[in-house]
Length: 439
Image 1 (spheres, rainbow, N blue to C red):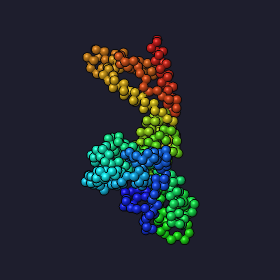
Image 2 (cartoon, rainbow, N blue to C red; image 1 turned 180 degrees about the vertical axis):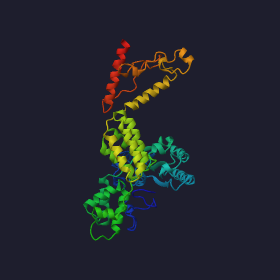
Image 3 (spheres, one colour; image 1 turned 30 degrees about the horizontal axis):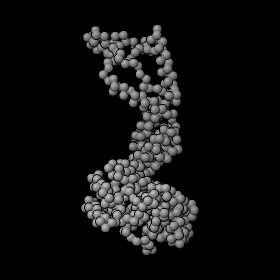
Image 4 (tube, helix red, strand yellow; image 1 turned 90 degrees about the vertical axis):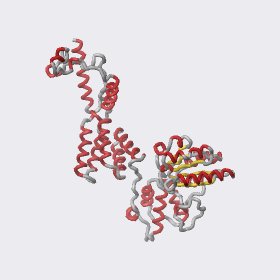
């Protein structure tokens, strides 16, 4: 099971041999030793309160890789005096679960409670997840599930209603520095890197403690004549690939962050999230579709060129390919971020669509419908139509609304960008319409 301090044998005793992986040898012995999760394990945290009360409810540990989910579950079982029974959803099926439940019942008869730890619980399908419910409800097991995926999307509502979701945070720089200090204390030697390289090493871990310790172990295994600088570290260690599942929550989090940074007119933040997506392997055409959507939803007629820029970027990317075409995407992103903003067109669309659904069968006024046949002319189709180009100022001021409906205002342009000029035109036409209606 993938965890910060996990070994293949989850029941292995403390005090590993020197040949064991560094992360294994640094495995915490108590919950207080778990780094970066004090909001849960501290006295006021959910786990801290459970331990203090000596009672454990079913929980789901949700967090990024390498944050200590498996270790936390194991230490939690120790802290409340429960038997720890681990299983991985990646390697297990219904038969394995049945054996675990049967074993838990046997232990329950002897007065021993079981903490059933399910790693990667989101990999069990809906039917398998339902299989946990009766054993959780009757107290056969206390379930502790671990997942890197959003439980709202991946776990059954029935299971979520019986378990508290606790969020483990990605390890910050201070927590990762603690791990480096512990590694140096355990081995009795400093990590062979200078201060700048140490900072780069922490940054490269991207919140994953297990990755950091694996990198440290690699550095210890090499006979280096002198500590590495940042450039030497980068040349020696493989670059870490950003964690980004294009069909999972990370995908939606980043596109939401990009969209909201654009809406907030922050070109620097928008570029950051754009870069996060593209460097992690997001499909450029997906990003371009989102930029076109943004241009129509959040800029609209405040700058009609925004959508033109986005479509031009799409054509440029198609023409140039990668990596040259990414610059066109960057240009479109910057244009959208720095353009005046208006959602007036978007609001007008929603309001007009609703009105159309509510009044969709009303006949337009007779003066503006065509009369292609003699009969239609005889019954009044097109009668009284005023040709606007023949009117003063090219504006007749005629009524274009169904007789059963009062005129509506769907589009209210802002005073930003080009829409300010549109607002002036509409106000001018409204004045003329009122004058000619009064006359």
